[in-house]
Image 1: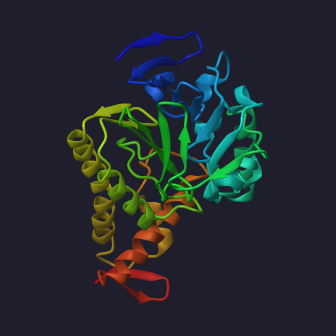
Image 2: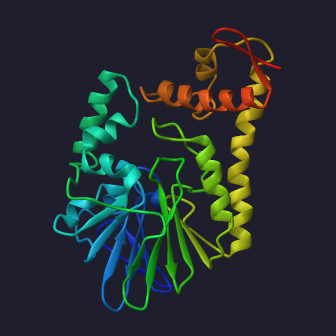
Length: 301
């Protein structure tokens, strides 16, 4: 593993033929980790972050794991380079308005978010972006990058398996203490859980994440961390069941919070908590663990 410092706010750490471009604050939001994958014939960049706004490494194409601002903030450095994303996130990558709409915010908050996307993250939309599908293979010459569709976080969220190095980039299945996020309009708790299972079935040497956890070496260690990450979903179920010891409305559950800590503020909190709570409620109702005591009021069975 070789570390190369850069003056642009990232450092390159080599794992075989893959360069992990670690962003500021060790890749914590609003920064992140990008990939630079070199082959004999061509080079790919995955998820250009804020750190790649200036002096970005040359690439013949850009792959985007999903259309969230922290994963595409450096796209301006690749204005003349082909950009690819899963079809499920294609509209959001092509249009900033579509990306903001996917956050499901009230109008006044959506307007402010659009301004942040434009001014802080330099998101202007890539109408030229082209779609890829699960299993699409990019042959760089002696090295391949295969798309692994991992929906749930967003509809089109994807990882990338780089061979022959055995490097699986799992993007925002990031193993951080914040826990699995499935609070956007197009998010899905069930699909997120299926994606976690798919990740656990892929044997690799290295597993790269988008944020602070960086790269995990070894399938056993990765699966241990993945199990702990998955357990957050089960903990949310348990917290909700405990809170529903007496009848509660969806609004009361959202105010109780399953995702964000109490001190965190912002116009995005209520919509995210509401969508997250609804997904857990629906699942617990299907299991018979929660009943609708009267219209709009839920209680543990």
